[in-house]
Each structure stands twice: as C-alpha cells, then as structure tokens.
Amino acid sequence: MAALFALAGSALAAGEPVIGLITKTETNPFFVKMKEGAAEAAKAKGAKLLTGAGKADGDNAGQVTAMENMIAAGAKTILITPSDSKAIVPAIKKARDKGVLVIALDSPTDPVDGTDALFATDNYKAGVLIGQYAKATMAGKPAKIATLDLLPGHPVGAQRHNGFLQGYGLQSLDAKSNELAKPAEVVCMADSFGDQAKGQTAMENCLQKNPDINVVYTINEPAAAGAYNALKKAGKDKSVLIVSVDGGCQGIKDTAAGKIAATSQQYPLKMAAMGVDAGVEYAKSGKKPSGYTDTGVTLIAAKAVAGVDSKDTTVGTQLCWGKK
Image (tube, rainbow, N blue to C red; front, side):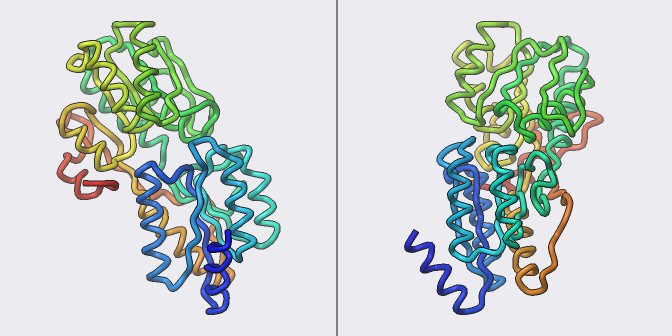
C-alpha cells in the first residue's frame, strides 16, 4: 500500500494520469501479457500504471480491495477483467459515481453496461470458429461431446460454450445468455475454472461417465492441456478431438504438436493498450469511450479443413502471448 500511494503521489505531482489495471490473477499467461501491454502503453503515453489482481479466478473480494486502493491512490481510470461479473458491479458503480472511468477488458460485467466500455474478444465468435472446425473435422461422424467449462454464470464461459455449439450446428443459446446449452450430443459438462489440474480431473470424471467421448471443447488452453493428459493416461489421446480458445504460445505449441486440433486466438496486449489509450484520453479531454469494441479473434489450426477459414501455427506463433 505504501508503495502504491508513493507511486500515485509522484504521478499526481507530475500531472501524469494514473491508470489502474486489475486482472483476475497474476499468474495466467493471458493476464501477464495484458499487464505487459498496459505497462508498455502507459510508458509510451506518459501515464503511471497501478496493478492488482485477485488471488485466483473468482476472487471478487480481492478485486474490490484492489479497486478501492487504486481510487484512494488517485486512479481516474480503472481497467478490469471481472472475476465475478455480477458481484463486482456495486464496487464499479461506486467508482463511476466518483468520476472514475471503468473499462472492462476481456470479460463483461453482468449487466454489460455496468462499466463505461468493454474492450474484448467476441467470445461467442471464438466459440463458433472452433465449433465449425470440429464439425468439419468429424466429417459426419456422430459426436459425443464433453465440455470443460469455466465456472457457473460467467459470461465468457457461456459465450464460448454456446458459440461452440452454435458453430457445430447443435441446439444452443444466443450470445446474451449466461446459461449453458446442453443438446443431446453433449454427454458430459464439467467446470474446469480454466485450470490445468482441474481440467484433467474434469476430463477423467467425464471419461468415467462416458468412455465413448470423441470431441472435447475446453474454455481455454490450460484446461485443454489437462484434458489431453487425462486422455493420454486413458489411451485415448489419438482418437479424441480437442478444441479450445486463447492462442497463448504454449497453446499454439500444443496445437502444433497435435494435442489441440484448433484454437481461437485472442489478443490481450491489444485490449490493454486500447484501455490505457482511452484512460489517457479521458485524463486529457474528459472524453469517455462507450459500448463494446471487438479486439479480434483468429482460428489457428495445425491442419486446415475445407470450408473453414484458419491460419496455421506459424502465424499463431507470431501472434501468440506468453513464453515462446
């Protein structure tokens, strides 16, 4: 806290805008890259960046505390990836009532207009792309699908899950729903919390429930890695198709190695840079961004399939984030 206030004090003395970035965790490579992108953009724009995070995905209290500390330290813009899309809204309202610009990155609040603006991947489209790829790859073979989801009620988890089903041509829900569709082809649904170890356990449980699973959708690449480990342990790694979302460098390596068939790549550095730019503009002119800005998504696949637009893993590696 002392360091936080000292940093803010020097920034205010110099007339530099103070911008806060609150991520879900400090360990996920996606948020590490987001933090790097924000730091680079802040340095280039002459702003000071304060950073904080929850202890784990879902830690709303940690994010609320970080927000309160940043406001006390003089932040006039806060960029946040909400862990709990509903529970964070009252804290954000308090901040906005004090004149603080709040922008959601990557994940929307529930309701979406809980923040001034949202800079994020079109998560429904990300799901649609891998759903289309999975369907084309299966080439008419009946699907028995396992979904390794995020956590109950989270918009990003719902959008990717439902988008995947939509892309596969199955009964689904639209992008505004936070419920998870479950057509008959989905024989197992489990929460992975985006974690590799939990993803492995979830996949093991799904295989016990239905050993004939032949398609696995995962919320992100750490969960996909866990699913692959479980499948390999069961001797099924060559016969089950895994698709995912993220586009981190490790995920692209796993795609090139055949562990993941395809992944929808998103761009955390771009989200962070756009957020910092908006915060600096707000400090200078008082102009606030509004609504949703799509930061892009690209399907990366080791093997192209007819009728589905994708880029290869060489392109994915050039654009990936995390350790190469």
